[in-house]
Image (cartoon, rainbow, N blue to C red; front, top):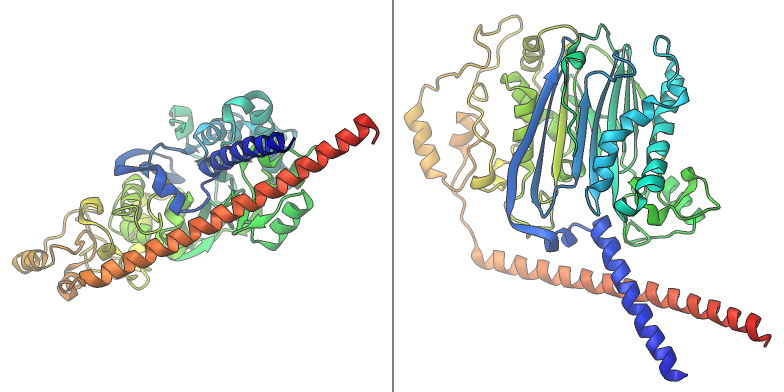
Length: 499
């Protein structure tokens, strides 16, 4: 009997470790775990698209980066088939595979439009659309489980969406790229007055209001008080700031292993697909909206992203080109520094034109330009850096009321020889962005290789400690589950043999 118990315990532990490893791959336990699933060189191929009408000018781009597969997805529709006055934009950050994110990108907008709360197209109250969005999230999650659960497996996805309808903007933070056909390019006669926001997960949306970044969504993390209460109530726990020690976000589409309680409603599960919705009034100061996955937000703050986009709008770059440069800016030169910049990355830039030409928004960004932010270019590797901003990064700020006829044209630099000298002098410094004055201030860097070696040794030591802590946590959970199983077996034995 002793050997039977030992054999049983060995098999049980083996199966538990395999299951934990599967969940970790699907949930991306931490940034360091991504290093084990990275390429030797990043895949920098950019998938870029654009569309627009008299009210919106939209660009998007995505990049696989260092990850072994692309798990992000995104959607942008200038009009829904069910209501041509409704625009839809969504970014989906998948984990554990691309099935959940791709399914959501193809079906979430349809699920929202098919809800009863979506109502009559001609007269849709604000409250009904809010409820339609919430119900749409739950419906697409349910359909994914019932009809494609075996295919999705342990995969899940966050989602951030923005919907525009006449005088209302709805935003919810939750790879199939839907192309824009001729019906989607119709002018939308609307002037936004209100914004509504909601989200599941840690993908995020922000809006630029006169150059100031204002959040349209808030990340759902297991450490949030409200999230902790729901997780504990559903029988889960939070360890190392993760759901059951594994999942880094507390709300997501998919991740059905955390939604197995039959006694709880979909809103009350350990991980829920139920989104938050927040309203916001729009003003003339609102310029553009940025939707992106955490591959971007982990590297740059909300304000840094807004400043980055605003500079390039003022320089005359198209939204899709700005998206490309943003992804290249966030790309890490290697995956040895904690994993930041090593994730899949996707971004959508929605410029609010309000029936005015794009040049008017460019003028506004030049006229109301805030102080130039501190650049991060010197932190990036030369081979993965954004191409030069030739049109107008060195262009002088124009006074109000004046604007060059050839917008975006190349501006000659008076002292080209001096610039070439500076570039030769600073070969190790990224000169992709910044004007001539900033380049002149850069000095060659003296590298202390001994210091770097000691820092790397310290980082390796910290990583080893983290691995030991994670291993100890896994063993603790497995032992607890094992004792529970023994208790169940003993209860069954007592009932069967009437001891």
